[in-house]
Image (cartoon, rainbow, N blue to C red):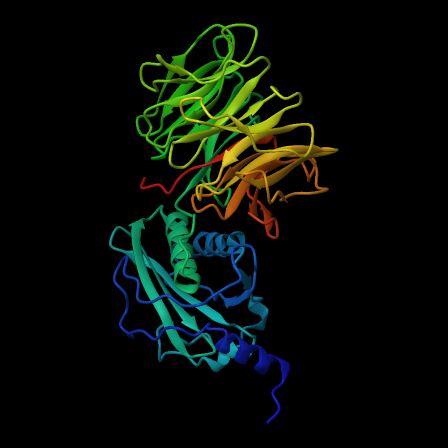
Length: 441
């Protein structure tokens, strides 16, 4: 028997190990994971055809929920969402195993199927997702979530996390946020947003210039530089208490902050003399802990290694601005970037193996490099200026600011640059992004 191309593709998906799980048919309780299944070529591959029909239920918040869920899956870079115009399943079909025919989803070429329901539950909302392997006719898993009536977006993010986990086996990032600077109010203020660009929340409202927000490891605070009192001083915003306090107001600059993984110190750039050097201070008292550099020329933009044992930074000690690495006590300084004359804004991968940075090649572009200087990879090219890279918690993605559409916006890219998508919405003027760890609030 000769297979047509669609049948051959489905057969290949089966042989490649896409069909790994058969699970119980009872609905999952909140937070329950039934099984893990489909494989993929990785973040940014867009290689899993998935069907995402509209949610069943009483219609409570369904439009916002579905739009958010669809955008999340598109942002993840794992999926190719099949056009709903190709769906042939009757409206009477259910979402649970045995309540629909898998053949309806093989026709449009789906490899995976995510069926959802959303409706009122007491005083709040309840979302349920069932994820299926279409070619094998099996359930990969199911989860259910509850929240207040205003939690449609949050439930959609949690649904996206569940789908990605069940299909790829990987943890997603929709329980994280991105801090950034925007000038929509006419001033440079600090904001945070969900990874899909929604849920925007203004942190500073001082009508001044605020720059370079950086998350602490727990995601409960941001350090940033502000000119509110005329000098570039360092501040900390406690996001749980909605309180902001100044922690360093030394003469000269107090910029480029980076929290240590333990949260016990902040590395930053100070200029007590004619040069800019890197110091560590106590994040509560603001007292100096140590001076880490003292070379001629500038030393700026520290970024901690994930284990807290080292720092990447920018230095002009060899001539032009280049990326260097040193131990946390300032010893064992060595150069990492060797190509290009101006390399800045280092960001250490949570995996510990790479550093992202900005290099000037006509315009500004994002690159990654191994710790020994090898394996330099270009992430962006020929699309405006791309600056201030920051890693996702898993080290598979980066956010950065890009002017490719004319005005600066926050963009997401897979670490290899294959998949790139704009996150921020509105008029533009978005800069200095920094990606949080997984959050519990």
